[in-house]
Length: 338
Image: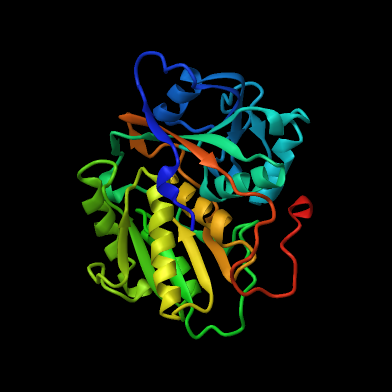
């Protein structure tokens, strides 16, 4: 069993130079209006720096987007990442890569990690910058909340069983209560479990999170304070998040309470990393999928200030792990043709 707690993380200074060893060949960052995104892009030491402009932010070439930034109209995470990848040098897999996850829209980040595995990349550094506060506290809107579809993220499609009697949906519950409700209603027959960020990024953010999650309570079907259906992981620690998922799922399996498992990370990017790491390490070729409620538009800035910068060293699994769960005879998705 994987011990996620041995993975390396550290805090980088907001002011002053970063310690030696924090240099990369390639930095990838999502372009937004956020101060915390732009400061890290300028501060990071990398031979190549790439801005990725996601179409859901609705930037245009006339919006003072930096020269050389990658704009592409594809709203499919696989098409977008693969189109960007073709711009890079053929030896990219041998380079030291850092991804600032802060401004990434979640499905693009998830597929990028899956794509790294396809390219033989086994180690990347990921950054995440905490805000001082969300712009409108618990009333902050992160997307237009107009969900166009709920589907599996490319590269995270499970080999599912026809028996759905003990299906489970685990939601990383963030502020977007309408997205929580959409994904919960999409799997209305599944048992719903939520993971909340605790400790939260700031002391007041947990209460704000709970206030928003209450709005989705009827869709989820269990009270927020039901200890059997609500669990906790630090909002800024992907490795503890992965460990919580591992313990939770293993406990359910020991009691024979899962037919198909669905994961939906809707909280901080650090927790998204934890969901991805758990899935990629333990769930491929199993009756497990990662679901996401896709929206047409996202806000370019939702926070004020920055307080802490985290670096996580992500050790990615090999391309073809031994499957430890039941699977169908069909092979995994051919991502090269996604």
